[in-house]
Image (cartoon, rainbow, N blue to C red):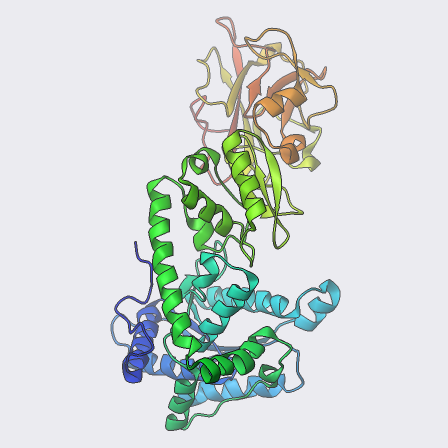
Length: 506
């Protein structure tokens, strides 16, 4: 497993600057064939990145480089932002890169949504870079974060009470967004801010100074202008190389732990991608992990800035290993829901993700008549296909299929949502059961039970709980002449009728 994308690069800040600068240029060059969007604010770090990208682009021979854009995003927060965009446009012409600029609606959205202005600006910025890269056919976005930025980020995480995730500081390479094919690359993490300034002066390149960088009410600026100078002057230590070494050691430890998770059969992508979205993991695997590995996975998978406090962690482990179900609030407005077979991480105001394979129906389809031959799109993911075939036929092999004696059905058939007091008599089972109890027994999470597709006949009798249970009405027998074949399929699946054979109805 590759734990650091910067293989064979200069790693530590005591390596000579020309060696580290050449390594940064090499990182850029390795990504050029896939196309690169270079994010540039006009500040010294991003101007240095633009100059290095232009050099690498001009030197590239084989394979030929893809598109290389210099991109400025105007957040609309300062009057001088228009001048900053013009500066970056001129810089693109000076170094020989294509310019792309956009204004982001940060002030407007902040007025409407409120919340943390910096977090909103960052979210819109990375979403825009992701979109621009995809539109331009670029596989990579590059930002000019330096070793000083990484040190400040590590200290910010530390002050929040982070675990291992925060000690890794800024990742040198990761997906720009969960599920995105665009990669975010930071080639300058082994270069100091003052080194980049000296390099720009030597090349005769100018840059812009952001006045907000002097605002000491912002924690990052307080670290940069107050705490770090105090550590240097009073303790005689430079916090930047110290943070660099710690971050690299933490990255190596995380790589080892990822391998351990893979060895136990647990996908580590939830942690690799920052735990930001909804995700579900196998409860049985978590229950079988060693204590330290399970605690680390849960704490990191919580996806909150400050990790997971000890009380919440203990409660989660108790639920997972004690056979109980329940929910545990997490920092940052998130929640961990422990179900019978899964542990789900998700936003507190949203339900956990549906179990894989659970076919759900959009509520707008409630009461929809089922065609004798044809298909109904139940949701964005699932389709129900109906086809009438000559009988008799052998029983279906999958719970996603059902067969009925077409001539014994009371038409019309309708798709409905589970209703209060609805009961079902299962094929081959004694008596009737409450549908609500059946959904619980089949481990359908509560938020999704009212979206389960139920097929009923003209008299309201439950024929099929789609993908879960077959009612006892209209069974197929030796005397059956026509068989109604029902098959659930994912909408991306190619058309066909695997259960009944032959071509699917149009």
